[in-house]
Length: 549
Image (cartoon, rainbow, N blue to C red; front, side, top):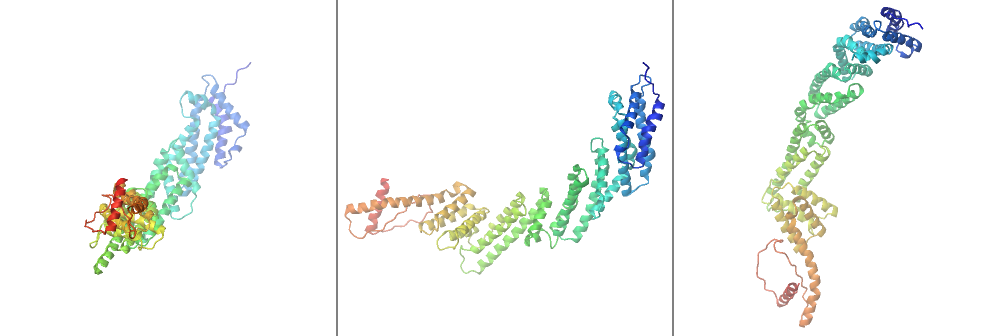
């Protein structure tokens, strides 16, 4: 049995591998044939692979693994240096990008076929000597010989296209995406090349672009129009990342845009004459206010100036209501604690701006605080001899007693809820409590309360705000009356029975008693009452009945 033919290095390389595979591969790439499946038939591929295999498995000194690995790299390097790089040096702008992406595509094809031809090296020689795989080696050659030479010009050309698109031009997004993918690939498994060689320049270019644009917008547009453009710009940049940039760039890119068009322009926007935040609030521009919150809502430090303006605006509106009350007081000959119009104006103002806070500003804590501080400011500014606490309590008295406001049950409940909200801003809540208890006592003792349910509803709302200690006496007053009804029902038969036993003659006295718990009810001056004999007998009977219980 004869020994296998020894293949010499130059013979195997020049007469087999180079002529039948490498030269042909380069010719095909130079002719822009990209259909990889038609480049080499299975028979042609196997023939070249077998030659490489045999040259790598011959016994020393005819094992050419090291030399073939070296020539694999030299072949790729020579093609890149002699053919690819010169084709790129004459190109600029978009033409450079197109040529680069074409050459990058060709290189991937070349790298793949070269790895197939020399596959046996990857399996044994590369692993044994801890060398870069054939694919990785091919990528490194492209990076050092091509990418590092043109990356600056390529990044500038990409940025120029991106800025053209920002100005409304239609660009080849697929071309930019292909270039982005090239930057990603040059990171060899990480994003270092993309970040250092493209993204940093992208962020600097974006900053410069939007610094210029925001200066134009702030000069020529009102606040609403500026915010529309700002919102559109941010959405466009998000979509741009989705379309052709790496997703890791989104947060950094939007951060740069927000700094330039929002953070640096915020105070100029908020205070812009004729269209700033105060004007939007005064003219009920709800859509614009909601857009303002969406734009500046990402950071509390951006929202604080807006909240401050909201607070000052509400204080101003509340101050005007106080001024109108002051004018009415000065024009009255006799001042009373009845001013329902004043309380209703405060309630309407609170309704309006709590809705703005919850809907336009999404119930944000900063704006809730601004609303509270504003109302605390003017709700505690008393005018005349009657305090606002007195006016609010009297307003409740007006709608809870018979003969007062003619309202439906729903309206009564609504007014009570809103008044309790207004009450929460009072600094001296105990003053309100004292006034309210006196008025409640009068309604109950004089039987002027329109509804026990409404009375209890109001007390429950106060209890929810201030706790059971605040409303304990009020609840005690209602309980006294409820117990008093039971006493009266039980006393009636006892009263009749005692009258019959005594054989009392004369007209029957319609007699009723309310037993009030000391401490629950307001104190009134004591005075002596001389009752007629009939009344004295009734009181004695009730005292005896009550003591026996």
